[in-house]
Each structure stands twice: as C-alpha cells, then as structure tokens.
Image 1 (cartoon, rainbow, N blue to C red):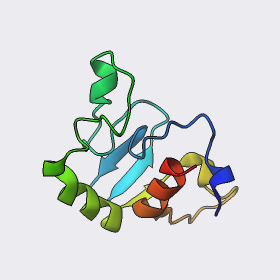
Image 2 (tube, rainbow, N blue to C red):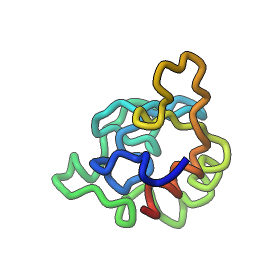
Image 3 (cartoon, rainbow, N blue to C red):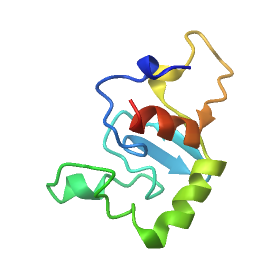
Length: 104
C-alpha cells in the first residue's frame, strides 16, 4: 500500500470522516469524528472552525494514552483503499492509516 492510494481530497485528519464502534472505524464519507466514538460530528467543524488534527480538542495530553491504544488496537475501513470487488476486506490497522494520512 502506498500514499498515492489515499484520496487526495481526504483531509490530513486520521479520524475525520469515520464512525467508530468499539475497535472498528467505518468510513461515513461525512464529517464524523472517529475519535469521539459513535456517530458524533467533528467538534471543530460544529464550532465553525477548520478541522485540524494538530489543534483538535481530542488530541491532547490527557487523551494521548487513549489515542495510542486506538492506534494499536483499531481497524479502519477507508473506502478508497477497499479492494475492488472484495467481499472479505479486513481493512487496515489504524496506525497504518494514521501514517498514510498524516505523512503524505
């Protein structure tokens, strides 16, 4: 997998656009916040701010352990990386997705 496979329109925010249930993040192609859990929208966007992972209220020292745990344990399913015609795609580890999105 290489960085070119990530949709160039996708923002450099690893949790933006995903709905999280337990350890699975599903692409909702919207403004969901995967780090907030459930079907919550991006808090920054709802406050009329430009979403920015580096300024995100969820990305803070108190929450760092939870974020690191999620990076290690969660599986994410970005639509642009789903193999065409696949019925058994297992997604990828959230830590891999984080690298792809944040370092392109």
